Amino acid sequence: MIKYIFISLSIIILLISCDSSSPKIEKTESPIDKKIGEPIKVKKYGINIEKYRIEKQLIKRNQNIGDIFGNYQIAYKWVLKASSLDSIFDIRKIKSGNSIFFFFDKNTLDSIKKPDYIVYEKTLKSYVVFDLRDSLNMYLGEKEINTKVREVSGKINSSLWNAMTEINVSPILAIELSEVYAWSIDFFGLQKGDHFSIIYEESYIDSTFYEIDKIDAIRFDHSNHYYYAFRFKQDSTWNFFDEEGNSLRKTFLKAPLRYSRISSRYSNNRYHPVLKIHRPHHGVDYAAPKGTPIHSIGDGKVIFIGRKGGYGRRVEIKHNSVYTTGYAHMSRFAKGIKKGDFVKQGQLIGYVGMSGTATGPHLDFRVYKNGSPIDPLKMKSPPVEPIKKENLKKYKLAISQYQTTLDSLINLVHKDSIQ
Image (cartoon, rainbow, N blue to C red; front, side):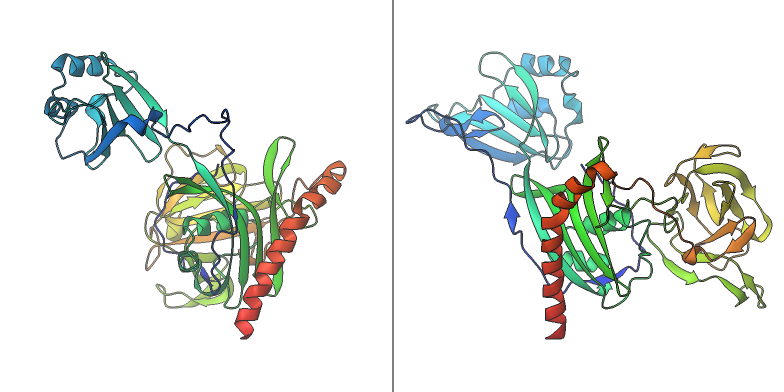
């Protein structure tokens, strides 16, 4: 599953949709196994609801289980028992605004307000059941998750984030695309006229969107070149590969920030905004809000961490005998990072700031090849772990239908662009 922790945006990733596509393929539940003539039992939270009248409330501010039980003539001893079952659920942790449901027997007089069950929704996915029929039994449950396969396509015109919103897709998918193509497409340089098509899966709970489950296939047309990405399992590990079976995972990430804009490029004669003189700028400046996370573009050893003149707070990482990278003007370093540490590709090393000589918050990112600076935006990184020869036929067969569908979606976008 693809999980996500939401981060604040300052990206200008230029992309917007022009063609919206509603879900075209949907997974359905398996038929219910039952004997002929046997009625289907409808359940909610694992409870057969045919015999119950259900009432819903929202937890009020400062309301607790004792208050709720008291409103329905439930003996206080059951509050004490529920409190003792904190290994199952700590009743002190109910949250205001969350839903709580009461199951009343339809055959019971309205004047008798004691429910058989009370269900508290901890999250959209999980819940707690208080079974009050005889004594008190408390247990946890999780709602069923339904998955839909979606096919969408769009055209660059504004931001990738807005593109996803306008084609009725969770904007989180924009983040996922930047992760898949982290080694091959510079998402800070997307251009008007670029296109994309995606086949992916969404999870739903109670008809409410829950999360993006996984991406199956992508085609991204950028700068007169198309980039395919197909999810495939090799050696018990899922990764993304192109149409030829080359891995999309490279030695280095394309950029050390997920979201930002390039405010200054590599130059041998740049006008310095603070010093008011022309001098070389052998790096790339990524403008981003203070506190934006900075990640190492590859595995390596920290050879310097501290203050260094006009660079301010700076980290230097030696990746191999050829390449070293530098990250400057940080507001602070990642907790625990020190000289001599080995860091992994994508590992957090610090946060954007404006320490040293800087007019605003940004990251000064530099790459050195054999000790000499090179343009980070022109650095090429070879792919690793391609599809093995013995798996290539299986892989080609697996992606053929995906590729046909992606191409069809892209063609629809191109046709709409011409009209």
